[in-house]
Image (cartoon, rainbow over all chains, first blue to last red; front, side):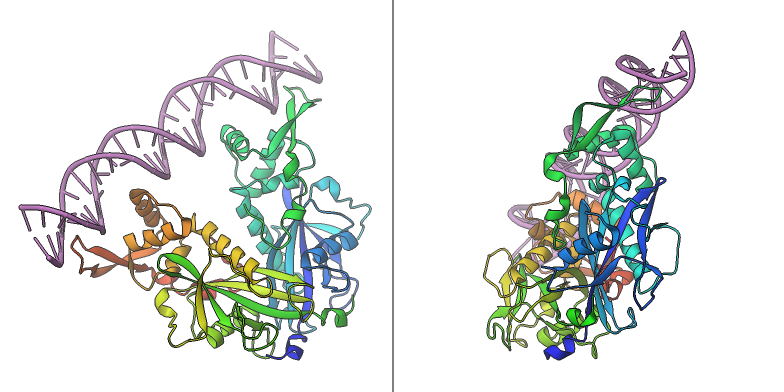
Length: 229
Length: 229
DNA sequence: ACAATAGTGTCTCTTAGACAATATCGA
DNA sequence: TCGATATTGTCTAAGAGACACTATTGT
């Protein structure tokens, strides 16, 4: 019950940065600078820095900025992973977050250390990062069945057929067009961008949509895993 | 980015122990032994002890045993709360869990320090425990709309009308009897206890049910916030 | 004009809720 | 037998998916 015991716990934050690439979900991995596992691909993460971070959510934002050079429009706490075995440095706690970004936000040429890896291809990873990624993917897929989460994987504007494709990639099944549109209509979070249509292809142009104002930059609303829906 | 920084973080676990009393959801609070807030009612919790706990889930189980004297049949990670301000001792992280127990498991006479407080009555609490409780209650209510979670608030055996009352207490609305029974039937997690009926009242006796074998003691399945549905 | 895909109207089938009939107890 | 509540059957309304039709582009 004494504080010194507790001070032997290493406190870190890891971020599962997800985006769609070639129609399938990918996670961003970085080559580690330091030991343990220096040079090995792993989740962006690091120690919580009390002098820099107001809370762990701030720390996650900082990781994204420092390591991947971006500000994610969607960031949510996932879960906390802990134990003796997960980090060779000792008993540790990792508060894991997951972020969803549109492909164009992730400039891979400017961030040569970032590698995108398909989430469905099993791969050995340091620490328990494989488990953390699996948990994030399950969370995203599960939320996709009943929420608007996948819109954060699209860019600022998108057509409904594009969005439907995103849902279908995540859920791994094709969806009914009419039902999908009805559902999006009910959710009441999208608005057509007047006059902006997707042209250039040999068919009727599709209307561009965007998130309604209140739903852009969800980040501020979900600081401590308290976000709803 | 150095370890010593991170070691200034205080790492604790708090448990939101919920049960039904007089038809409404209550949370178990304990009078604190030590400073800060000695003598004040707060959530059962304490420092993670690396030498005792394999992980934070173990720590939560330990808190429940040490402070409330019980083994909860349902325990799940809720979220992690963190920051400079929440604990006067310094920058801290609290990995919060919530437990659901049937009323008869919580022997208040054997645990005189435990107080049951209605969750819907606002009350000042130390740290950010009010927020933590609110998050737990929201999680439970939200999960009750689509899952079997509320069965863990019943005892080992219960009738369907009893269970429906539990759902109704949590959701704050009355449910359709036929739909409720259909739903329970679909979930396929309950089995009638052959020959056991609730008698003693002046009406047709109700069949007693229990969780099917695989669903009892959910604890082992949800160690790291990875449990589904 | 034609191929291609966007967007919409409508029909059907599945599912959820309302209602009501039957069952079984204690008094 | 009566009042009470459990349990079950059936009807109806609401929602989801299938299908098909119209709209609008580039070629």
